[in-house]
Image (cartoon, rainbow, N blue to C red; front, side):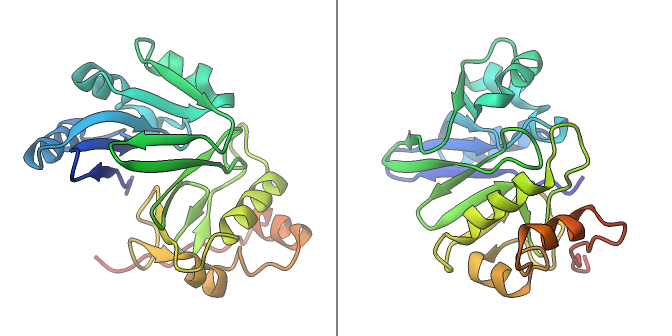
Length: 211
């Protein structure tokens, strides 16, 4: 499903967080071990199955604490009942060694979607893609809410590096500045224009790069 998984580590203290472990948990564990990193934290952007199916296995292997938007805690509990889960309201700071990760509420694709900001990078899950944005026709989706979340992301410094949840764009990552200049959803001038574009039959899709 062209998912991205990211490892966020403090190379000095060797602590590590994993974003949205769903597939290839064994590979993520191997990558962390190769670098001498201890996985202590799991950051969940939203609870669609293709972002959480590996959480239970990751918790069993590492004992990591799991963070997710408060409105999606119960969904995550059903997928990983043994996990130590922390519900986020937004604005919380999560320590990974000497790094500080800020939770930014970005609902709209789901009821409690959350993005994570650390040292000039933002991990956006399915809220913001490279050249696109998440769908709103799944249960819990809402186009006006997603518009407000995208505006919140657009307010970040333009040099902020964007790491989305899927490899749907021409490049794996971009910047907030590039998205504001090229992403058709961020070029919308009003909520009404965005809702019409996002919910229309001809909603634009990101132009995926050739493999």
